[in-house]
Structures are given as structure tokens and as C-alpha cells.
Length: 442
Image (cartoon, rainbow, N blue to C red):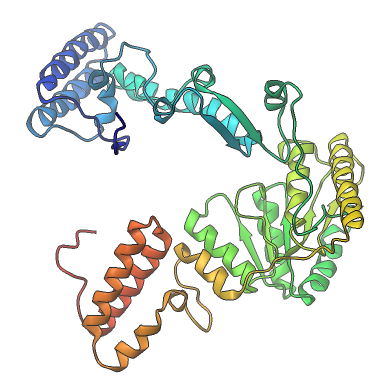
């Protein structure tokens, strides 16, 4: 019969029958002795001592409490796998005839292939220096060929599919270039590099005068820093986005851009998620004729597409010559643009930009924390009864109700909303001297 529910354990928990722990510990112990012999034979007494101490402590923890820190490194023993055998994964839970959809496949597929090598390189060093048994190498991502063996019927989704996806698709390609909003791909203009910064500054002032935003991509982190500093000195409200920024800070920066706290966002790689913003009407690509990963045809097409959410969208490529990558990107964008224009004309569609309200933007970026303007982000999650309860002098009742709301949001998997309510709770408790609640261990 059907199973009503199933538990999928996190990657840090491995479960076996109670009687199976002894067998697991025996197998770990045997592999430990073999590895210690290898290290001693190689004159690596310090590494051998380190490995013996670490592993025997882990074994005792498993014996006494059933788990230890880093228990996933012993997963092969708990799973009953042979050395080198692939670990189980979520794909094993699907039926044979399921449909797999790989979004942004031009980047995702290569990441799947790279995961194993990155993991292997790190763990080989741990094994080499006596921090882990060789069995830790078997707690790993799938090899790409193993992933391919688990791939059922697959749909690759990408604005710029790579060679692998095109080859696997066997020529079966479906284009989706018509947007429900009627928006078309932006026109691309090539301008000389010589005065690119001054020219860009003038265009930024025109765009910001329309209350629209600008994305600027440079080749290096230093160039981004220098450009952001120059624009700021010229009175432009500019923000600099770089790889060291955390995910939550990134959300906050994008929120500030959308709400007009900044007009320009400068960065090196604008291909990452979250940058399809309807407020952006100008994308400027500096030094577009410098061939490389960030100036390949695929990257240029993707970057240009950042201006496709706004009816006034346009792209500037600053270059002294038109490279092959630029020509491919311009030709492909123009091809799509012409199809979109023809469709709109045939069906009487007038393109329109879909802009979100201030409240909608605040709601969608709750995870970034308070918005430091004339009102904070807490207002975005205020409930109508909050002011009434506060005026009635019933702070405890209000806190209790907020706790119910927080639990309800968490149960519905609305974690950003739950986190925002939690932050509001902490603010209110501090304001009214109610403490942070007993039993809160963080």
C-alpha cells in the first residue's frame, strides 16, 4: 500500500538499527588500524597520532550517544557501502519515469560536474594529514557520470544553452522569446572606450532623472571600486556589489536599488540570480571587447537581458572593436527582438513594465533585515491589531499573538516572514522589558 509520509534526514544524520552500531564500529576500527599502519610505514607518526585520537574519540561518541561531530564522514559504514560506491541521494527517491528540469542549465550543469572534484581535493588533504580516515572520501557528491545515470527525461532551461545541453537535446529545442508583458529584448549600442566613464555618467543622470536604475559591469573588482568611487564623488547614488557580500546583504543592496536609495549598481559579475529587476532600464558593459568568460557571447547575452524587464531598456557596450562574441550576442539579441516586435505588432500588444509597490518590495526582501529609511522593514509585517493592542496596554497579549503568527508562518514554510516576525518580537520584548523568553537557546 501507499506510505502516508516519509522522513528525509539531513545530511548530518545517519541512522542504522541499534544492533548495527557494533558492526559499524568494528568496520571503522579495522580501517583505522590499516590506515595507522600505512602512516607509520611512511614515517608520519604525528599524522597517525592525530588520526588515532580523533577517530577513537568519534567511535566512543557513537557508542555512547549514537552520533558524533562529523558523523557524515562515516556514512559509508552506516550505509553498508563498498569503498568508492556512490552514496544515496534524493534522486533515488523518485520513480523511474519522473521529469527533471534543470534551470539555468548553462551554469548548473557545469556546477554539477565540478562538485565532485572540489570536494575530493579538500578531503584528500584531510586524509593525507591524519584528520580523517580514507572512508571520508566516500561522503561525496555524485560524479557527473553517476548523475547522468540518474537523469530521466530532462528539460534544460536557459536563455543561453551550452554545448552539452544542445547535444543532449538532439536538436529538440523550444524557444520562449515572447513575453506576456510584450516587453522586447533591449537595443544594443556600441560606443568607444575612450570616454566611457564620462559618457556613462551623463547617461546615468538621464536614466535616474526618469526614476529608473542602472547596472554597470566591469572586468575587475578594482575597476568596480574605482568606478563606484568616481560616480559617488560626482553625486551619483551608487552601490558596489562584489563576491564577498553575504546573501542577506546582497538582498538588502538589491532592495535599496529597487526602492531608489541607490540609482546605480556596479559589479564584476552581474550574471548571478536576483538581478532581473524591472526598475533597471540601462545596462552598461565596460570594456566589452576584452574576450574572456565575462565577455563571452553567452555572458553578454545574459548580461544584456538584465535590461529586458523595462520598456525603456537599453544596453551600452563600450568597445573599440566588435569582437566575435559581441557580434554573436548582438545578432542573437536583434533576432529575438525582431520576433518580439513582429509579434506585438501582429497582435496589437503594447509593451509595459511591471513595477512592484514599495510594500511588495519590502515584503519580498524581509530576510535582509530593517530598511533604514523613514520607516523600517518591520512595518511591512505589521498586523492591524498591533497598534490597538499596544494602545490598550496589552504588550504580553500582543507578543503571544505574534508568536502564533510566527509559528504559523514557519509551518507554512514562509521562513522569511517568520524571521521578520521573530525580529519584530525581539524588538518589542526589548522595548517593553519582557526579556527574550525562557528556554531560548538560539
